[in-house]
Length: 265
Image (cartoon, rainbow, N blue to C red; front, side, top):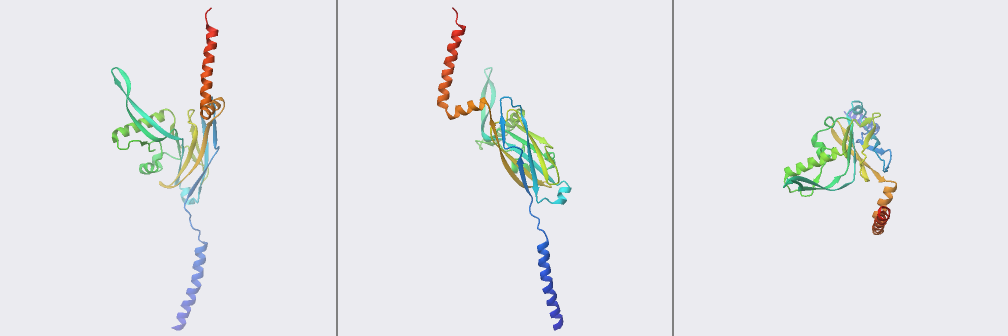
């Protein structure tokens, strides 16, 4: 009996180090992460700017090889323009004349919003996820200034605001605009419209695994004007008083010269 107990103790003593060694050798699966890099951090707009394509490269860290082979990963990339308040008016006829009758003010509205996806949005995740993430032109949250207003009126103005942005080309979606170059590397192509607003834009990438949101990352992009237009714009804002005096003097000089040229003897 004593010999059996001693043998059992020896076996347990040998198994403990082996179990610890096996635990150390087994790799732990870290959660997936996503990284992106822009082809350029600065876009210059001149007077003849007609739009451009922005390329964003990215990679999935700690990707599960089996899920990658099955195509279980999806990526949505968004380029969100600077935000500012926006007032939307509804017109109606009054005594035969169209007048502004009702308005709705929205706060922090992105001036532009471009989306690129690996697949059709409905094939990536469900609408609840898009609403929770405020992701996509149909689900981006446009915050009204007066939240206690009539919900039907707010919904109507919100839909009208989206339609106007889509019609102007400032809001857009590119299904298939994100392409996997390998199991973990991807490339996204976003279109900058000719009327893209200047300012600091934010590029955001969302990673989904089998329809479940996993991670988000972001990077900044500066869009600036260049040439004579930018010089005038900068002087007008940095030296507004002298710019005003120059504008008045130029107008007076132009009027005086026009009088000399076109006067009748």
